[in-house]
Length: 79
Image (cartoon, rainbow, N blue to C red; front, side, top):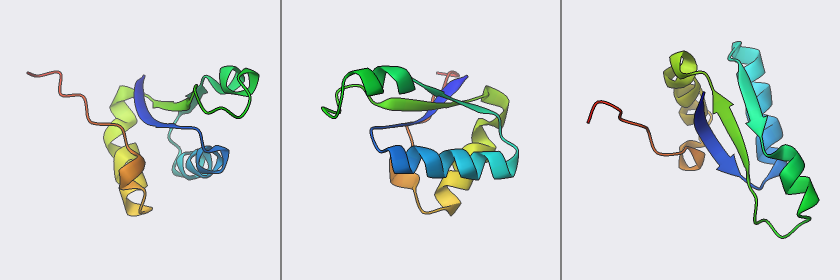
């Protein structure tokens, strides 16, 4: 799995999960429990992870939703 988005915003996480679910893109929200433990300091953001084979589709979906500024930089493993 690859990191699609990293954020402290629970509303954004919920919206992204809804978008990905509706598109049939499997995903996982990492560090959700850790960010709850640390309180509201915002030191431990949650990460939305997507399977590598669905990453391009997920990125396109996020861009189409107008949230391209939330995307993590692309991994270019070919370099």
